[in-house]
Image (cartoon, rainbow, N blue to C red; front, side, top):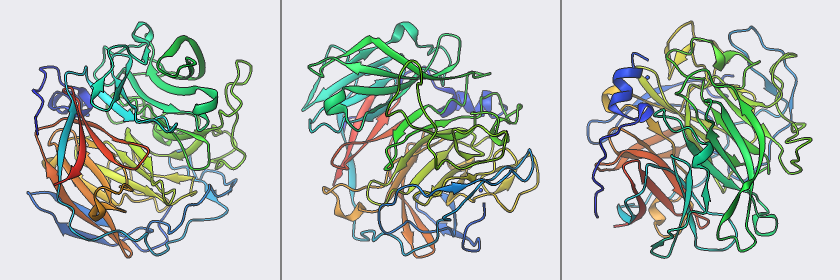
Length: 446
């Protein structure tokens, strides 16, 4: 395996520079009692595992939450009418899973995301932070970008730029795809574009802006777009930045910052860019209707388990703890606690009983910035099936998190000299690792 040479430029949210400048800058109760169990993981990793509802056994569409006024301005929560309950975990393969990283391409300009279009081709789409989407197919990186919007993307801040791409569930017929990027004025923009008829490139002039969110600072931008198993478009937004959420955006239900958002873009138009799903949770009379979950600091990569519909959200910590949150399929309306707490610990206020606990937290002694991954559902590595993979940007560590009855097992899978900016998943469920220094790797069996 070839290890990419690190670039001198480091990124705020996922770098030692970010720790120095931003460390001084940088959960609705579970149905089971919270039980903290310390699991000893290899290579000096100290991880706290928390008992939580286990993954659902079968795919589920979103439950229909009903209105429930927030209990206070500082700790809102909403109560779905069909509260997710703990059921036996999806069967995870507990056999051996010896893996390695196989480099596919290097020389990229700060890659931050990878996906496929779901249209039956073998093309991988790689997002470069500066504002390009490149295509890689069977060993070849195409010289012509699929999309180039550098002219409208602000990537001057360490966490700003073109942050994700997701393709319409009907991409093969409609040619639509969606991106999130930082505009020149610093705002977060979610837009729809159209691919050209040959689907080899996109029309940069076809942009339809769907949602613009004013972002007061340059960090904590989130920016990942995904279609859920329910066909709705989800967007993870950071709390707006600075340090310690000075505007209390994550707990303010009148703000779209520090949240998971859920909208319907199936009939997007200039007149009506999106609609609100009728079953979105209600966080109170004055709450924004786009809200799906609240109390997040910087959800840096989340994913749906393609088999169960369960949602995993990795949330970057402030000064002390990184965390991974688990949301059973369809259970919107949860509050993950920031900024009143960081991980399981108090940050700026008392813990509230309606907060949802993370399933994993780890201290900054073991890393600096969590990068969320995926539940492995591929066929090439049977020992990983049903296991959630995630990593740390600074340490280059990749862990595997496996459901075990009412709790979770967490083990180090591998460690390399990478700055893990993102994981990627292809249409067959195989997983990839992106090194922010310029390379893409595929996780393969040893």
